[in-house]
Length: 428
Image (tube, rainbow, N blue to C red):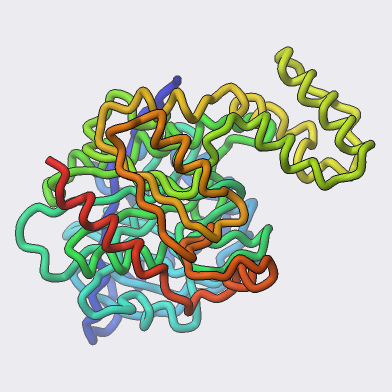
């Protein structure tokens, strides 16, 4: 598996609300940044960097990422000052195609030491700390293919080193909070988990997958492999392991994220592995099962596609009705997924493992957790009655179960966080 070189170790900026006016030097810096950005003068923006930032983020990497951002979001139309504190100014940045929070940090020489876009909501500033005992701050990690953007959730009362959990998301375009625009999931599962862990003295980092939210990459869909997701996780593991605030790194993988974690954990200082609602069968069998309810002609063509992929080739003449699952551009990813054996992966883990399975998960049934437990007998199996795939209480009725997918206000299942906290606290 290839590993992506880390160019910028990490930018973690804690935003604290202080009632201060916008400093004049930030006005000047932001005016220049807007002018250079809109005129495609990336070199001029780079000239505003501090020596440390230039070293961490070379022009050869900064330029293509910035150009990609410009192509995706368009010109920066206006910026509105939100607040300033501890050498960090926060602005509402309105681009042609989207709105973000723009975080800017300057050193004593008025050179940029931090420059980060994060999601914006009308109440984003007020909601940054939903719970007063928890502080959230942005995380930005540069990779060869772009940048991974996420959120660090920290308990405010942390004195000594504390554990940190890297939350790795499920399949599809899943963002850091566990939401998926394509499938309509708006449950905020990972945001809720991060908040609950922090209230129990455990930090966490959750992040947008490649080309989702604020994570951008030059990797096109036709180039994407499961290993690419594990490369991103691998880089983040290294960042967290090197952070002196943290005593141990634990991986939490949800659905497909558990497979990503299996790949990423190799040769890392991770102390524990948590799998939640993951298929134990290989992808080929999972995909075939998903097709059983489809018309026979679709099943037959899909079988032909799988036979072709098994030979290491792609199948181009795909019926439009199968594009959602087997379009030509996604077939290389399917091949990389099908080659992975979850059972072999769990057997090969050298760290303690917690296996989490809900009894009303209509996507991944309870026998999957049992198969993982059989493969790794020393793993702890936590079966939570009435918990569904998004880790919330739900009935077995399909309509009522999927109803929870669009209700972010619903809490996580009661037995989930205590089980995770107990597992983490017992890790050496």
